Every structure is written in structure tokens, then in C-alpha cells.
Image (cartoon, rainbow, N blue to C red):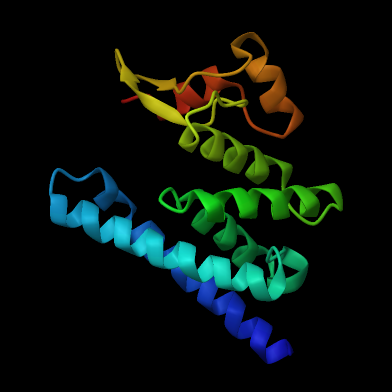
Length: 168
């Protein structure tokens, strides 16, 4: 079993590395590159569904810290697999309750899922676009409480995030 889990960890890490290499293609002006990104994230979403069928949420305890973070990234980018995102969110919620997953990562996945459902996000982690050179979040459920909610899960204030990512 240990060898199987090591292979699973390596697979998750390889999937995340491929995701990182291809992520910019999702924003390309070239439709073929956009399609390649969509296909990659769809394949990864399918595989994450199979992994969740077999193992539940791949926690750090199960597959190691890096592979657990890779599973989160795969779920985060599974935008065309809303069912996979919802399921990953539910399993991560259970893992967070038992201290086996990151509340911060769960916050990002919650927001991503809510935005993909056409609902208001909670933490302001998902960016709708850029206005006057600054990122603008998708609508938030409680914009006046956004930074307090972010702090509860270990996310920096939105203004600090904007300042770090402002064009030089």
C-alpha cells in the first residue's frame, strides 16, 4: 500500500507541475492554447474524481504535503467539472474539521466553487478582472467583512494582495 500511495503522490505532483506549465495558456489569445488548457484541466479533474473515489480527499497525512497541495490545485482549476469541485470542497471541509487540510486552501476552493455556481464569493480570492491596473474581485457576499474573513483562514488583506501584484 505504501508504494501505491507514493505512486499516487508522484502522480498528483506531476499533474500540478503540468498545470503550472500550462496555466498561462488558459488566458492566451490563441484558441488552440485555450483548448489545450481546458483539456488538461478536464483530464486532471476526471483523475481527481477517481482518486477521491478510492481514497477520499488526498490529505498530507495520506500522500504528503506537496501532493495534497497538488490535489487542491487540481480541484481549484477543475472549472469545467463543477461536480468535482463541489465534491472536493465537501471532502476538504471534512478534512479541515479534523485538522488534516488547510483552511486557507479550502477558502480559495469555496470561493472558486461559488463563483462557478454564479454566486457571490466569501473571501474575495477570485479575481473578475483588472480596473485601473488593480485586480477586482468577483462580487462578495459580505464585502465589508472580507478582510476579517480572510484573516480567519490565514489570507492576507485584499489591499496587501493588490499591492504585491501591482504592475511595477
